Length: 148
Image (cartoon, rainbow, N blue to C red):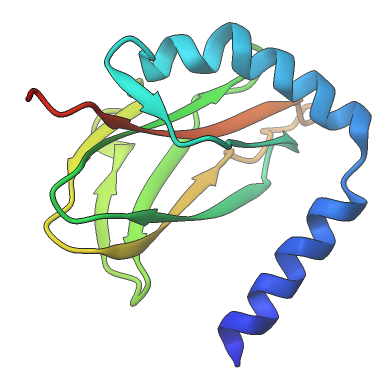
């Protein structure tokens, strides 16, 4: 039942999402996001998640990973935003990756050992005394072609 409610919320958000925000972020993803994902080696999954966020905001993205495939997660943000933190968690909340140890990292490569859904949480640090900066933040997922 919870999965059905979550799915309905995602559909409603997709319908009411303003087109001008999507257009701004779409251009950002095509100019920067796909370069960071490295589309020569990784095939984009077919859709990406991109939103305008302000400092102090966060974004959670749910993605499916399949056994035996190697994936690359790319999290990119506009240049005016501070360094972002992203984590990858299991549905049970176990952290399997956190870029805090490597704060300049925009990517994470992962070979899944089972079929699973993972949560990618992206956080922008809060503004310190100044007006919060806003900009596009995108999460892209690609899978590696097999070497056959």
